Image (tube, rainbow, N blue to C red):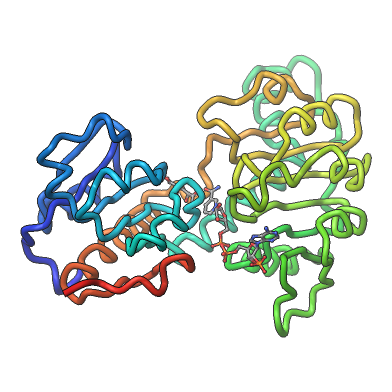
Length: 327
Ligand code: NAP
Ligand code: 8YV
């Protein structure tokens, strides 16, 4: 809670279910109004006249913004804001904020857990014990894969990518990366193309943002470049993967295994991926501890409080850094 927390006569719209701690803070500080989802057809005339802020898990379209003429700020709950049309917001003097940094270490921890689970089959091994198979058939088969000697490529060497790299360095693994721009002062091998990175490594970890620029970037060509000993881990966004190509690559041995925390159409996971061999699947839990979700909730609401008291955001997204509060 910030020292500025006091009741303000400002209507904040919260579409759908939202984090309990964030809701409690919004209720103490603002006038909360709700709709089932961020659909312009669900807005009442009163909402259209009064809403000045949105707190949301995402999914805010240009049409929804246009239906709220008093809208000043969208506080996105999450660092990834690919489902908010931030370019439209920036062009219409609407601030968009996200929740960077407070989740970085948690998501990096989850990435390492997912990678190890994928390579060393810990879920399968535990199931083997619980099913009673250990007693009936003896030891669990040796894992086909190992982390030892792996060359890891990070697609998206930003805040979380770097935290993952630091952990993997401690595991004695070699690291390379691909971003659009080389990171100043970073000594890991840089590859100017994703294909170049995939050719150089046997383990590809995607922690790049979703959106048009990365749509289906992980496709059949990239998976073929990763190769038969290849492991793919996705903790970024499902939209970044051609999921049909990934399922096919797992089924025919083009790559060896995959660990996925994110999917293109959550919570729906394509049957081809559910059926694919050597796959570890998680229901988007990268940041999902009570500790970290509370920190994200606080930063989400702190952005609203700062905007409506100090008239400035705490963590604006790049597309809206130049948006200024009026009055
Ligand atoms: P960040 O610090 O902004 O890092 C993103 C990195 O991706 C940057 O280094 C950026 O470098 C690179 N990048 C962006 N667009 C690219 C492109 N088109 N091609 C190649 N590289 C590109 O963000 P972060 O805090 O690390 O978060 C990264 C993403 O993780 C989020 O956007 C979100 O989608 C995902 N995430 C998932 C979970 C989960 O629960 N699974 C939790 C948190 C975050 P350049 O700008 O130089 O290209
Ligand atoms: C959350 C995330 O699961 O921050 C992100 O980009 O993907 C996750 O931390 C999500 O934002 C909650 O809606």
